[in-house]
Length: 281
Image (cartoon, rainbow, N blue to C red):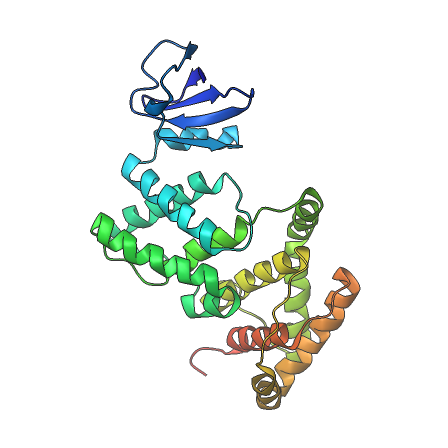
């Protein structure tokens, strides 16, 4: 294996015997003058392929202890999830975890989506997120809000490795996200006759849910469960909101060529109801 560029004392860009570029970790491999050949491969503790160059600077910013914790966590996630993860996740997740730890040490709280909401949509990822939070508290001696698990879970969801055609579809929908957000909110405002507070926490939760919905659409996934009775109950309890969601369904059929499942509509009713509730009234 040939070292072609130093990142820091323990990380370097290398080329393997097949001519493939990779990132290698090993104590002191960045010390010698490059390029040079590593004769004893036992000095290499770990290799990482297909890492985007734009993320390499993170290796100079991340504490090594956090990086290694993240590597082991990603290994566990790969065994638990039934899809391939983007190779850049090891660095982006380490950056996210490091930020969580630093915030906790400074007693800075950032509002995150509620983990129980993520559990309904992404149960495996939520389980991994809760596991990571528990291990972070033990390993780094910090106290974390349990909703930090949702941020870790969504990092896993968003790192699902897509084919090129799927990625193009995701990119297209994300570019249209602002328009879709405003279109759906306009439906609510017009039908119910209220002005939605766009700086409220419940509105932020709705925007996150909508983004996850668009990603599921792009990946040809849908929520579908046995919540039919609850869906009918919610329609009866909030008929005006349910009518708005029916218009959402028509909108998505026209714009995205998909039909929302009852499960998707149930969660939309819940979120829209929250953003329509005026505090203090």
